[in-house]
Amino acid sequence: MSKNTDSNRTPQGGAFGRFIRGIEVVGNKLPHPFWLFVLLALTVVVLSAFLAASGTSVTYMAASQKVGELPKEVTVPVKNLLSYEAMRPFFADFVKTYISFAPLGLIMVMMLGIGLVEQTGFISALMRKTILGAPPYMVTAVLALVGINANLASDAGIIFTPAIGGAVFKALGRNPAVGIIAGFAAACGGFTANFFVAGTDALLAGITESAAKGMNIVAPTHPLINWFFLFASTITVTLVTTVVTEKFIVPMLGDEGASRDSSALAEHVVTNEEKRGLRWSLWAGLGTIVLLLVLTVPQGAFFRADDGSLLPRSPLLSSVVPILFFLFFFVGIAYGFGSGTLKTASDVPKLMQNGLQGSLSFLVIALPASMFIQLFNTSNLTTILAVKGAEALEALNLGGIPLLLLFILLCGTLNLFMISGSAKWLILAPIFVPMFSMVGFSPALTQVAYRIGDSSTNIISPLSYYIPVVIGLLEQYRREGDAPVGIGTVLSLELPYSLAFLVCFSLQLILWYVLNLPLGPGAGMFM
Image (tube, rainbow, N blue to C red; front, side, top):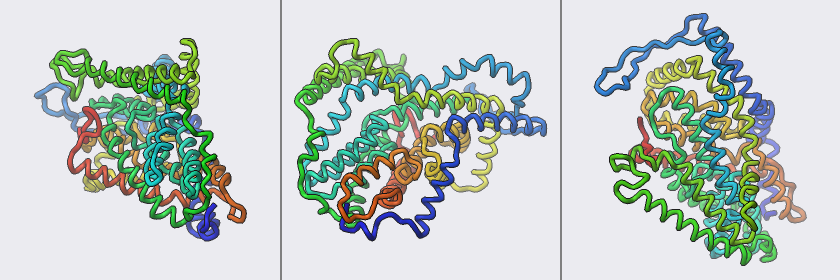
């Protein structure tokens, strides 16, 4: 696989090796997210009964919803969830609680649209054309850029990017292992960066909305609340991935590990039919954007507010999800019929149905998760934790930036043991969105800080579903005489990327904070 294999491979001993094995052992002992939320819900029920019996409450100054009225003192006690008063409405509204769970509708609608463009082959063809059309000296940067935006295809992008990275590097006579490692880093680190809007944005925003509404926090929580930051992060991650690859990974692995072999690209070449599909999808996308501009730009247009404004609230921002759905829908249909992957109109709903299959696991987890959040809010433990936590944070006198950095480190550490980004945010959002709102942080700021910690350590979690995929790809190109590839191989090679992402994402957030830049349309840094 490389000329430096013997000295840089599987760290079986030493502090790093023990650390990796420790994370794997602890992480493997965690229950499935479904049962984790069941246990959390039961814990909240028992804890509420105990705290209610002990008379636990919190008093704070609450702002009035009426303009001109002064804040007033409010006392909130813990509510006993084992009482008839709490349990009767819980069971009566069981189904309603599930189907009204904010992330559920958002992820379903978004995945219907994204699933269509993915199932027709549009995303794969677009990414392959972009990489294969890049000049050799730009391949690393283009691979990084494509990998970052490949999270539009969710899990498929994480598998696709390192695979084509290895093939492209081999075709250029470079070490394919370098392309695999760089592609995997970009695809995972890119979950906090994208030029486009992905299902992840809708899913996390839905969870944030649920947490904010539970505490009556009035602030934007649409899927675009982090988009300005994510757009800029795409450039940041591309540069970081390119520099780390060329300055650290290439010297570690060597870069003359393969003779030129263009046959490695045969299975990735964009066909004439796919090129025609891309042309048709381009026209469909442009047509949809023109229509959106017609409905938005003129004074008194359909998507403008009654006073003619677009920010901070307007029909445009409240219609983000359906707008994105129709964009993906029209682009996917145009590509499908142009490339031949769609033959008849009846094929469209079939592919949309297939696109939903990747969301089935979330639909199952959402049941106990929605109940946990409902019980958590009903018990008033959210308010108790938010007020007490805010008081503790103020007592520490950390200030905004240190507080954000500590939260990022917390999320990054948790990610090593619990890799599901949505499952972690379902636990953390009901606590930290209200808590940070009380120190002035907007839900958009809390969410983007979470995303930084979560995505930065994705690539070094021993529990990642994709580590075996990367190991298999590296083994595919391993030459005779090279040491076997193991989990330590992948994690040690991805560690430089993880640290670089963490530092650069944090520096970018500090810049955003100091300049008080908007994180997304209508979404500022502060309340």
